[in-house]
Length: 124
Image (tube, rainbow, N blue to C red; front, side, top):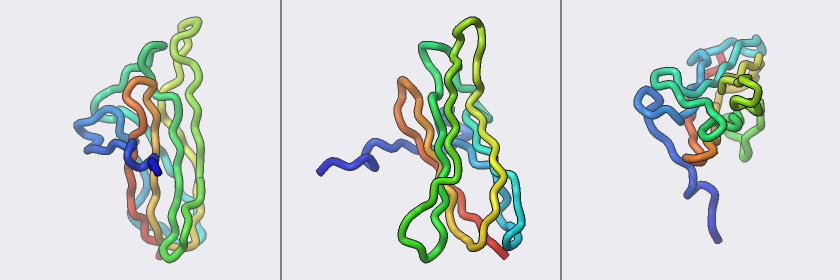
């Protein structure tokens, strides 16, 4: 059986313009909200044209000790120059966690495929 995981690409977001950057604190307080921002191209700007663009970013949280991740957010970027209108690949969500775990972000470039990143977060 083929697996999607073999198609996921990763790298250091400081040197690779396709990797989603997860902006979240390393530690948060139990049941207190925080802003979770995910973006593409923080260090090296990703093109945002009809021919080459980020189509979407999806964000998941995998709580420690749980079997499956939970989808936190899905951001679709639909305007890539039509009528000179563009959507930048940045998403913001307010999140409340009840346990520690790992945040995963996936992005899709219409030319270069799927990219991933992750960040551990501790709930105190």
